[in-house]
Length: 160
Image (cartoon, rainbow, N blue to C red; front, top):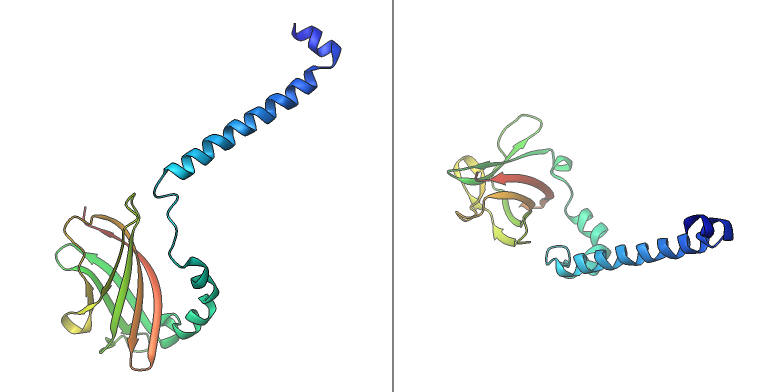
């Protein structure tokens, strides 16, 4: 049978039709998988306007190193997430900084939390997640002191 197809030249037409059918099948499976997964089909609210405003936002909120700040973000089991800001020139703690955080859980829940960072010992800032919030979080931090403003993103593991 295959020999007759090869000799008649129809094998090439069948091969093209077979590959096209395989491509349609793969595309159909991909579309179903993408639209049935709530995480994969999640959309950032106002994503277009945020993209348009990106350059303006970055100019208003530069990175902390432009201010001479060194920011250390660390998760401590007993205290939450600690944000410590020091001056790069002399290593002293930068005091009087206020901040807010947008935290995105990296897991299947696509959870987003917004909070004001609270003041801690020695001028550190603290974000206290809930007890059931173990996992990897991406934190976007907006920090400000007087006219000085900075924006940065860090990833931390919370809990075990």
